[in-house]
Image (cartoon, rainbow, N blue to C red; front, side):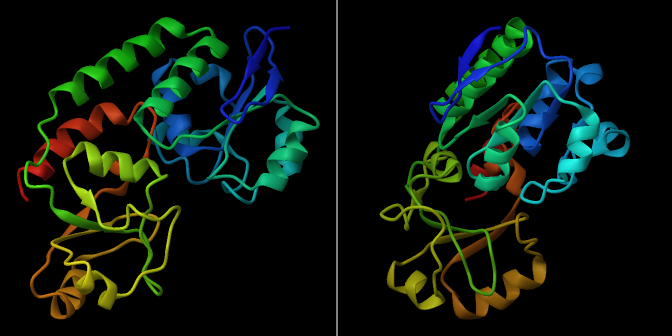
Length: 260
């Protein structure tokens, strides 16, 4: 049985090639689809909304942090794909005692591409994975970043407001767009205040569609408090989904950059 090392450094014995894969990670679920693994993926989470056909027809094993162990047991997976940040550590450890679990840890584009390549190897779809990687690399090579290094904040949550630090995938996407994350001196997902944004001279505030669904009314609410700041709604999937969606993210990011 082949042995692989996941992105946490764990060694995982995985059948060659797994025929019953469960994905606990939305962006990796979409990757499995683009690798042509429809018949080999019986279970996904309720947040795996892409592709829509899978969302409507695949067995849902709960949420990313609330998996249903009895449903997983019925599906008898020979591989489970997890992620350090998106899944519950205790639940993943419990699953790993019974099934092969390969866990990703994606914090920038390089680790995302490594994840894509490894999943391709594990599932016997290395050629398709490499094609996806080639397209993503070509896209980011052609991306023309913003040249004035806008002082930027990216909101992921409201009440309290939360943003992203320098060890997140979103931070790397901002950097590749030529944007300066004003909270790039901290890690993870800090709580912030409007006063702090003023003190840091925030010029651009991006309101993500996920995990908190910011809407137009939030722009008006924040604009009153930050009259000198440009505020835009952005598609969170294009900044935070680190699988094959990155192919779609590149033209989206380029169009967004042109609006700064």
